[in-house]
Length: 183
Image 1 (cartoon, rainbow, N blue to C red):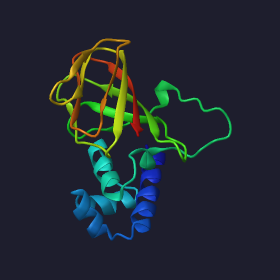
Image 2: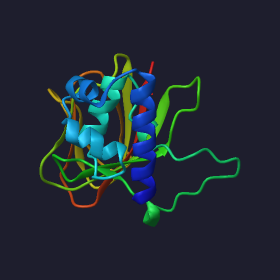
Image 3: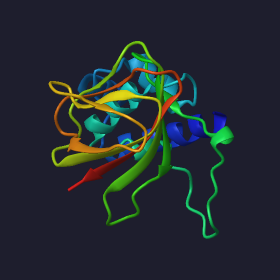
């Protein structure tokens, strides 16, 4: 988690400065407190998925920019036991970036882990975003917030990510692979 905090801190500062924004202005645009933005830039705190999405939208950068590990020329193996996801503040849900979109392409790959309880409700992402979900284990209601679909292991669903959407686990140990694509 310390490596992730360091990446988030470095990236947040770089993107904020590139946008020519003060910490106060970024806080205002994102709806994230100035203290939280400052803590994150200093490598402190535990940001939620919601916080990073809000900052990404305010900076006009994808969520993956904050959590993508440095590129490597050799094959990349990510053991499930080594994954450090970014938790949701509102639900038993975490998102782990598995592969970010390379320059010129616009898709990110995530492993989602969720538990029954509060649904993970997502605000619309960048216009043109489409999400693809393959449910791996458990059961979940996924998709448009107004009409989610009950998924079972192996089911695939695609839906507009630029409209409100939801992921609600109905069984313990629910997991899915999610591809976020910007068209």
